[in-house]
Image (cartoon, rainbow, N blue to C red):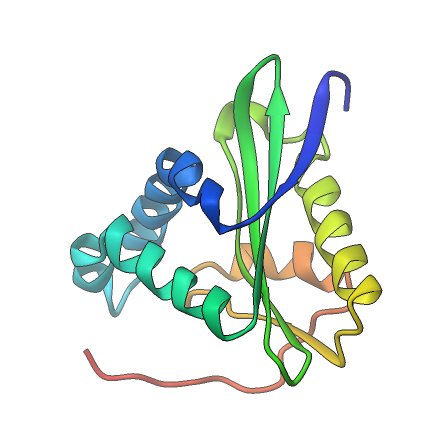
Length: 151
């Protein structure tokens, strides 16, 4: 992974990840067999507000991967006052994939959880994105339950 820097930041940097979040949301809309319209209606402003609320009720950290001054990837994590950690979002732009950037972001996030005493760590994967399971399994994340929803 040459020329990539991982930067830790707080919620004040949420606007910086907007283009990457929009790519991730479009990906979710394209793979969701049950809720594509949900993702098509879901805006960055809605997501940002939810993440800022998490930050007010606990801790919110962003890990940004930069390559030659360009944002290559992002990982957003939260930690509740009860020390429950969640990977809220992780995404690497397509042109930067297969360079271990996702691994670097995940290691930074998990290290931060460990340093800050997280009692548990979880991630929610959109139905239809089962190809992401292998990535998460490398870090010990395994399916424990499936949450069903209505639109």
